[in-house]
Image (cartoon, rainbow, N blue to C red):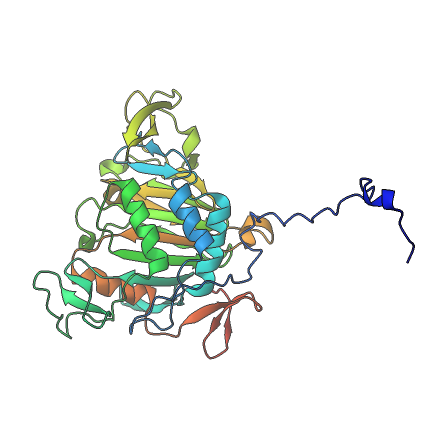
Length: 381
């Protein structure tokens, strides 16, 4: 080894300092970075769960608690009976994409089959998306017992429910979804959501037909909060037929930002207070007399809250999306929060979102939903 003179020890080094390799930036692509992140919090467990359900990793929980809502909502109410609150986004995109990957990986999903009668004909239907559900109607409540377990009790009497009350086994909302429920309730000024429905659309072939959430078991003028995670999909709305058929069912779908007033004038924006902040209101000089179909592109983290008379007068859908690449091939999760008021709602939601078939989980290697006996199930219609 070469010797150094005494002066060399006091001279500044000419060797450039080592440059640290920057950490990779968080991806905005919901289909990448799928490696599970370890966390020390115990999972949510209950006898009604088919598996323990992990709690949110700390970085996702922090993102939700400190960064939502991520934008000022706008109200859309310039058409008959329409009352929407639109966040674009509600959850910041990077956090929303991490939440998408977490929920797809950790939740149990089902491909429900059921029989529908049309006239004298019975048809076997396979739900064209993956589903799961948690919650119970307001006549029952999950209450912590002396053993620190959640027991299902009658809300009014605080006594155990009769074994014959439900045709299904209600499941409490796990912690990873309950945090979202509480946050949505706070921004919506609507307390008491007791159901969380989760849909997973594996690709463009998965869909949901036009329908409205106007069942009697939801009570009058229900609020439905709908949160999108993952790939972008079109969200369509059209008015139910009016008396005399005076509704534009055949015209083109009008993007929400292009909607006009009844006189052909551009939609104006007004300011209105929502949960302590302000929201943009889409309104013309008066409400349009002939409803137009609406199309919104819902991206990861966006949320639409359908309020008031919307469900009793409007239909909504997620149509199939053509294409072999890009957004058409990305998975999407939709979470809806709602309140059921009678046991019929509980029976309905579990029948059509859990059913009696097997449970599936997302497999990171196969990139598919996998039945727990090992069979790979691809999206089918």
